Image 1 (cartoon, helix red, strand yellow):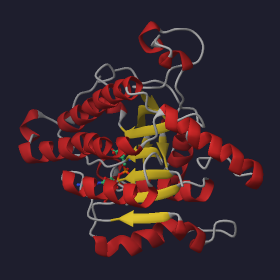
Image 2 (spheres, rainbow, N blue to C red; image 1 turned 90 degrees about the vertical axis):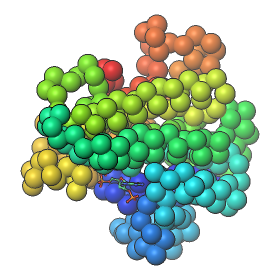
Image 3 (cartoon, helix red, strand yellow; image 1 turned 180 degrees about the horizontal axis):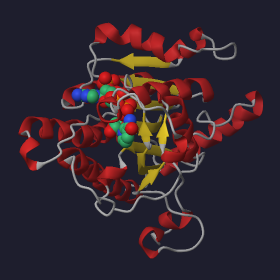
Image 4 (cartoon, rainbow, N blue to C red; image 1 turned 180 degrees about the vertical axis):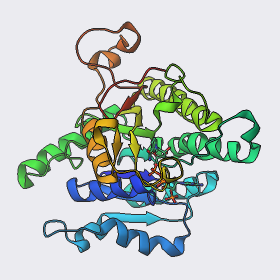
Length: 307
Ligand SMILES: NC(=O)c1ccc[n+]([C@@H]2O[C@H](COP(=O)([O-])OP(=O)(O)OC[C@H]3O[C@@H](n4cnc5c(N)ncnc54)[C@H](OP(=O)(O)O)[C@@H]3O)[C@@H](O)[C@H]2O)c1
C-alpha cells in the first residue's frame, strides 16, 4: 500500500493533515510524534475523530500507525521509524513525506537572544526536516519503480475503480516532500525585522528544500520537494503572538480547517515540469508555460514566495 509519513503529527496542522489524508485518500498514514509511545493510542483516537460511514473508525485504524518517541532532534528515533515503515510496507511505498515540526521563539531584539532556544529552533525547524528526509527519502520510489507501481494501480483501478491511492493529493505521476516553512523565512520579504532565530531557521529550511530538490532530480527520484507557508493559522503555536484573534481569511488568518483546505488545494497543484527531467531546468530560465514547483516555497494562495 502507498504511504504518507507525517512528521510532527500531534500538532494542530499535522493532526489535521493526517485526518484529511485518511478521510480523502487511500494512502496509509504513518503519524510520527515526539510524544511518548504511551500516548500513541490517544493520538490515534484523535486523528480518527470525525470518521463517517464510508470511512469508519475501523477502516481508518487499519490505515493509521502512530509512532511515538520520534523526537526530530535525535536521529535514532527517525531511523527506527523509517525501519518500521520499510519492514511493514517494503521499499518504494512512500508517496508523501510531510515535515510539520516547528517551534517559535519570538525575539524582538538582540538582547533577547538565548543560544539554547535559538539552537532548539534550528534543531527542530531545520535539521529535524533534513534528518527526516535522510531516513525517509530512500523509501520513495525512483521514477522507474514508480512506473511499475502506477501500472499496478491502473490495472487494480480498472477492477475496483480505485486507481492512484493518493487520489490527486499528490501528483499521480510522482511523490512529494513537503516542508512547513514560513513567509518570514524570506530574506527579500523581511521589511520589519525581529524573530532572528525563527526567521533564520525557516530561511535554512528553504535552502534544504532547494538542495533536496536538486538531489531528487539528479537521482531520478519520483519526488519533488517544496516548502509551504500556510498563512497565520490559529493554533497553540501562534497563540502567544496573536492571542485569541478570530479567523479573517481576507487578511490571511485562518482556522485550522480553513488552513488545511488551502494547503491541500496547493498540494494538489504541485508537479514537476517534464522538461526538468529532460535536462532543461526551467526553474532559473523562467520559461513560459507550466510553473516548476520544485525547490521553492509557496504560500496558501499557491503563489511563489521570493527568497
Ligand atoms: N500556525 C501558523 O500560523 C504557522 C505559520 C507559518 C508556519 N507554520 C509552521 O507550520 C508547522 C506546524 O505548525 P502548527 O501551527 O501546527 O504548530 P503546533 O500545533 O505547535 O505543532 C508543532 C509541531 O511541532 C512538533 N514538534 C515540536 N517539537 C518537536 C520535536 N522535538 N520533535 C518532533 N516534533 C516536534 C510537534 O509534533 P509532535 O508533538 O507530534 O512531535 C507539533 O506537531 C510548524 O513548522 C510551523 O513553523 C505555522
